[in-house]
Image (tube, rainbow, N blue to C red; front, side, top):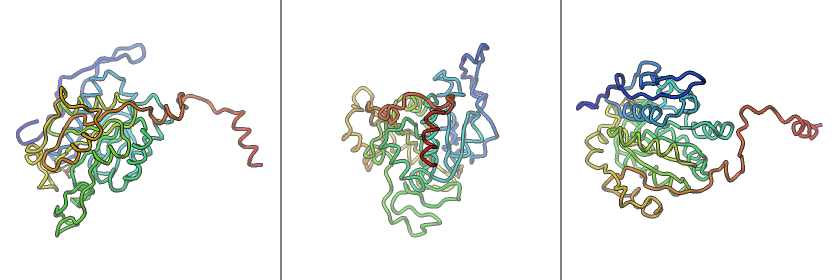
Length: 306
Ligand code: SF4
């Protein structure tokens, strides 16, 4: 990332080799690019995008084993930029689509790319329900505290008093706290990162993906076109990395306390716990993908409708 916060997407030398059937293929970051990127220059989405691509290569998993579900918003345009299986559906409905996909094909690494508006406004109940169930998905929130795609209205994470075209006299409500909400809803992996720190984001994304159960990566993502308050500098004055040698990520109450810190923004893994995922609890041990219908059970079911 350069001083003016623009990011060089192409030209990165990171590569990964994986088996694709019999043939060995070398992948580079550029291989994961699809359409030309249309985000505003300097948008925090670039940092998240690069971190995700690097993680895909670094994990050494065939890209066909990932499934991305996108919400509606500037973040959702990633469906056009990332050349990996993806689906973009209705506003706020990315989480239930991901849950369904994961239950149907448990082999997939299923990731939700969503925004603060999409996930915590239109999709709030889905977010809470999936966290309660410890569904085995990873949710990445591009938290820019504004609705960027629709040109800058207040979002659920906008600070109290934030002025926008939808709230010219300032927001009256207090903001939703994504980290605290995830923690108190039952999420078993809760982390935070900053779009200006790609290296840490990559690590956090990899950790979230390898966690069994509901994992959240909330990313502080400047939208410098419509949010002139929560800028790169604003975040740089507040973010700090949790010290892994002293931070106890199994301490739930401390994680809640960190999530509510009014002065500073902790980044890293705030909380992690081992609990059975929804699939494990429900004993859904086999993926239904690739299986034919159970004709006997189907016949018995149809008998009930005669
Ligand atoms: Fe990024 Fe904001 Fe531009 Fe959307 S409007 S692409 S969030 S800078």
